[in-house]
Length: 268
Length: 297
Image (tube, rainbow over all chains, first blue to last red; front, side, top):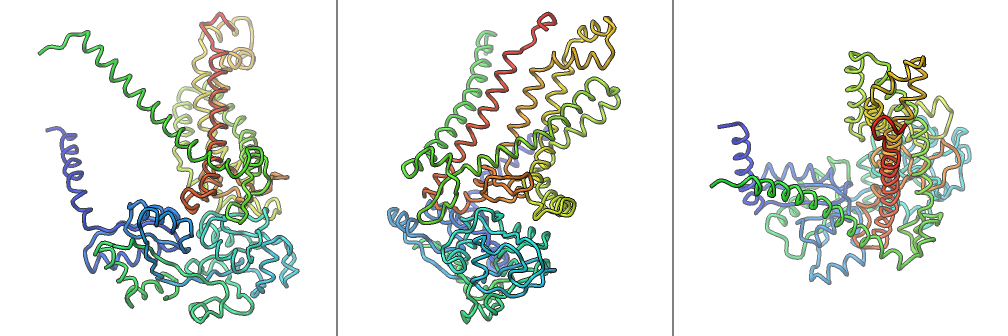
């Protein structure tokens, strides 16, 4: 027999068995912020139960859309479902159930060489509105402030927009980055930059600022003294499969919450 | 059972026709989908306000859906990258087709074409991590993520397209033309400038326009290195937000069938019109100036 015949039969066997395998597996889609938690949790979950789980990112809205289309069992979201989405779900006779799995603090970051270590929320607002444009106005070295923001549809931006900006507009000259990773990269390469990122992404290539004198951390986010915090959640349909509810329980269990912490986020 | 030759021929014709119409059908369906998902935004905002609006705040209440900064961003990035890529690409093509020895050509041509195989995300990452800090240092500018950086990276991607198409066009100029020119006493350079290039102009224009179309539609690089400020640029060191970057950055988070979602699809329609225009132009020039034999020069 020729080689292609083997390849063809292998393909045939695979395509026949794939749906059978998928029957009691779980799919998870959505927010890229929640993704690092989910990936670790799913690894541990598979090791424990042997249930196959397929995890993919794509953004909160895509996850919620997939849940409403029945093309995923669990949706990850770094924001709460919007009124419009809930209405759409109800029109399809669905009532998605929310499970808060972690807390996230959004933390302003600057280049490690920047002498500034604290900003008030008023100063942050003025910087993002383009009203304060030089670092020396807030106690730093002379230099134009390069304002970096997430694009307006990101969940992290939404938290920033609501709490720091009080719904005022970020000025159009701000550099918009499409992902948390890109934000971190851009700040670590520019000594005049300022940005904000979820606590799970902060590492030693950047310097974290405190807000109103309060350092963002697990403790300050939990006791609600740190102002810029949000919840991360997953959504399931009202009647999840037994495997899916098992995964949700696993993430909410102490073991799952340990994983949340290992991923750099805060227990719920 | 033996099938007659005629039937066999018909079957071949039929299957080719079916496959060709399938790809046209798919393309049409994509266009219809794009239009259906884009048009609803115009219930909220008029077409001129959409095209000429200066502010893009899609998630505010009330929202602003002006894509002028994105259009100027796209056009300026395309224009600057063309300024870099066209001379580079054409000179490489002329060198390969006319000047290089066959041995040299067999080394350089695959190398240039290999550039095309570089994943755009790799080029984007290179621009972000290596080029941006260098630009910042050399030019003493505020940020290296800007129009200039994006143009350089896009030029990287357009050069192989321009070179390989233009080289094919120059290479296929009939040998008699060169021979006639040289026989009249023209030097090699005079032959290239006065005969070979004019004769291959349709091919060269197609190469240039397709290279530009590649730059205007490219997404990953502009998403990573253009800076993303939705502001009409006033200098080449300003950050910009071309249309593909805006769509790629926001689509994943725009609530399904919300105004924002429709606005992004409408942006996609505008982008599609731009690339379509480039392609129609390329086809038109190639058709109009088509070289038939050696007599029409």
